[in-house]
Image (cartoon, rainbow, N blue to C red):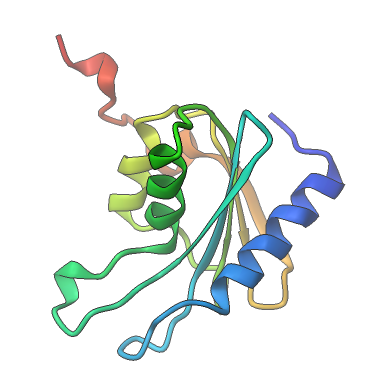
Length: 134
């Protein structure tokens, strides 16, 4: 799946804005995400850290959980902005896969330069999905 250039640019801009709201006093690695639902609505998320690291929440899951809490279940693309073009962690890959492996992932750096565009299935080969359950 491809996105029109203006849509990709909009998602990156939204992720850049979300990154400004990150709470990253421990890692100093702010992350922003923008998730495009099939409905056309964009849901933003930022990472929120905690002194007890296991309770930290990534930007990708923040955006996803917000979208799902608003009733969304189908998604087209997710833009992720980090300092250096970091990739989604394993937990985020798994959470996103619940809603489809065709999700397009755009990875960008802090300047909004898109470094990679690929489907989620390429980031999570042999994914465990709802299809694996009886």
